[in-house]
Amino acid sequence: MESKRQHKFARLIQKELGEIFQRDSKSLFGNVWITVTRVHVSPDLSVAKVMLSFLMTDDKAKSLQDVKDNGKAVRQALANRIRHQARIIPELVFLLDDTAEYAAKMDALISGLNIPPATAEEEE
Image (cartoon, rainbow, N blue to C red; front, side, top):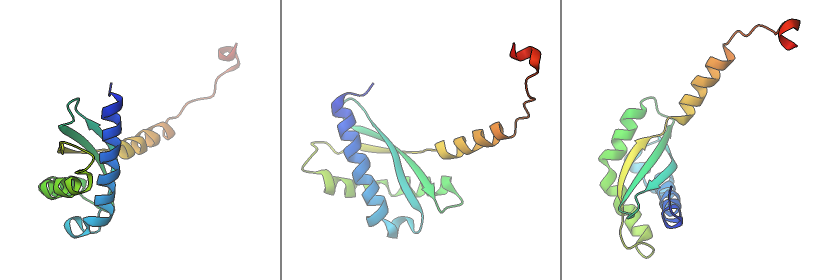
């Protein structure tokens, strides 16, 4: 369970990274739309696990690798934005958030079920 301090710091990182990915890093990632879905921060605030979702790309693994390869530049941009609010700029660990794909898969499975209607005996 995250402390109030961790949660507040995670929200700050999520907000700032979202702005970095949407506005500042078009030259690094091209037309890929990157969304920061969640951020989990370690208790000592030195490591931040950043969950990313990608749109307008066919190869999400390659896009994630591009983000990891440019992680130093992203961390530097984050440092420039939060340097007056944080003592330590956390190490960023980027992970793929596949929640949307999982939800779509589950929806397809559930809608594909063939459930027969209940008989009168089963209802009583």
